[in-house]
Image 1: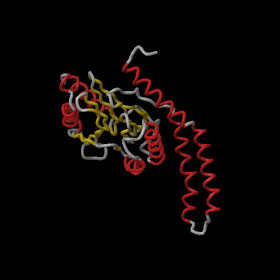
Image 2: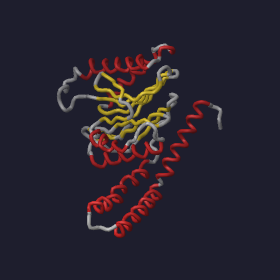
Image 3: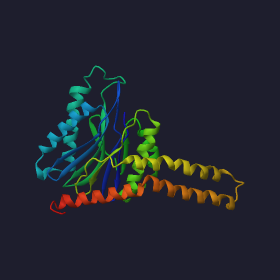
Image 4: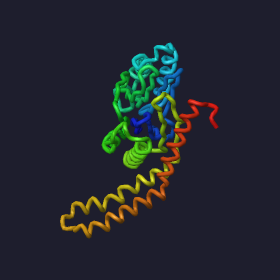
Length: 279
């Protein structure tokens, strides 16, 4: 039903998901949610049944708002999230007539959490539990492919443009391969000071054109490396062609503008959060 993923970068965490829900008919709806209380923030990317998950998000918000401001630690916030998950699973999921079948109303979240006491964390839920996932995580029916493609991720020291490019590629490839994933790609950023971006689609179609063209460019080089008879002089034109093609795809898809525009827009939003009167 979903590809939901989260990646750390050097100044925060980016969460992303597709927008397709598969049931009797395909529908399209956001799978990203935000909860804010005082200086604390949660951003969530959903994998699973929407209404059940939405009820859990409502309970999470109520539980977190009930935490006193000077007690908003990671542990307290995580307990509040898990209490909400237990409420919905115990009262609505485990008792559902479809429990134990392929139609069971299961849901899980990729979670970006900011505690004003302990900092930011990337978590994932599994039914009623949550756990720290370190630097990256993928959930959903498309997670198998997301995990495979995430091998290109090089860690939390990367800047947002590099991590966003990878996230676009992972979602595009997963949606093109897994029939349960589809629709537009959506993104949200949790900054390392607790600020959040709006949920953004960002004209992702342009970026996905670049992702679609990437295998076409790389394929001739892949086979050339396996051809032991090919000389360096014969290989060079392929390398030159690959470079030209990459430049053409980059220009056509305007990926550079997409990423740079996102980076600047989110940076400006971060400044506005700190200084609401800035023009």
